[in-house]
Length: 453
Image (tube, rainbow, N blue to C red; front, side, top):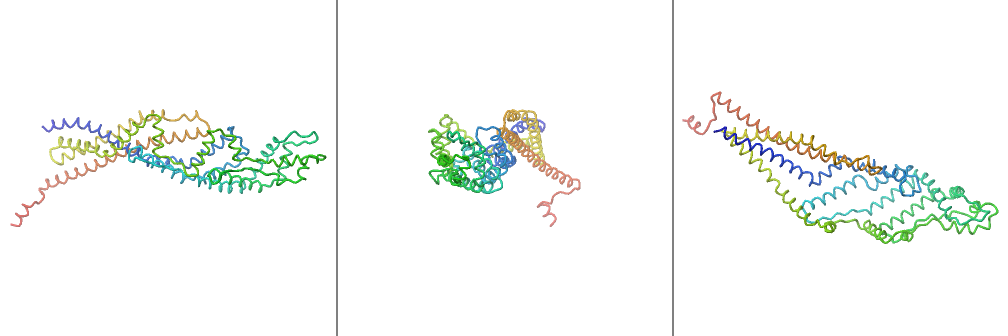
């Protein structure tokens, strides 16, 4: 009769293996995919916050230097280390980590139905204040400004030369002559102060602390008649007034000039950016739902949120099924309580080992080849995109490895718990066997009464 019962335990054992695999997988999904901590830990593990300064910013600077569409008046390679330090000062690792973790902690509970509302605000106004101070400290009033000065003087000479009207035959002003003149007249400290003033004006405009900005290099305040006559050459004193009109035109750029270069859409975008910087960039569930409503996905999204929330709240019930199965197997396989517990724990141990082996085999033979398909082809990208693709591959690999490690550890915990339980049952057997061999048995209430009589 006992063998018939044990024969019925075999299919239950197979069912237990399947159920345990499903329960462990679903539990791991709950602990990772819908858990903000999982994403936060992966970002820290991949050292993403330092990766921005160590790799992304240098790659971006190289991309600009190597033929980007931007016409840069200065050689960024001369001040690359200062720029990286400035970026790190404006957006330090602890700040970026706080923003990311605030974002995941805000969005994920909404996506999984744990909350019906969310608000995330990115504050940038204080960052621009730090930017101004950092640029002044590291570049304008630092050793790096000598290189910047040389580049800007060359740039200003080219711009002034392009603005020259047609000269009389007796006047010859070349670009090198203009550059030499500017170097002799314009001190480094003066130019640094002008740039600092222009930067303060621009930051005040962007943060909406001011309605206008002016960027100018008023070289006229530095020149004298003697400087201009030296530039015009001997015998050209009659053209001094024209030279003053030309030099007083200065290099100036204002918010009005900016607006003239923007179309209506670009102007609207600029004003939106100024508002976001001044008051914070805020995203709510209303913004998300409005964007999704345009694609007609809002109903399916809400349904998924409800199902995920319900499933997560009832997740603990899933573990009841393995418990019921091992209890049934124990009663079918054992005669005594010790035998039933041993059968239950032994089967649970066996099922956990099978799940562990199957998980590792599936990952090695099926999972890893699929991971390769998810990876970015780094060689198909260049510059910043290539750097980001490499780090993206690292994050993908780390995330999947972490997921599989979590499943492995859960099954290992089941193996350990079952093994400890079986050792307890074995100790129980040994104690009973020792008592039987020694002819002793536990003293009960009847034995005590007989001894007293």
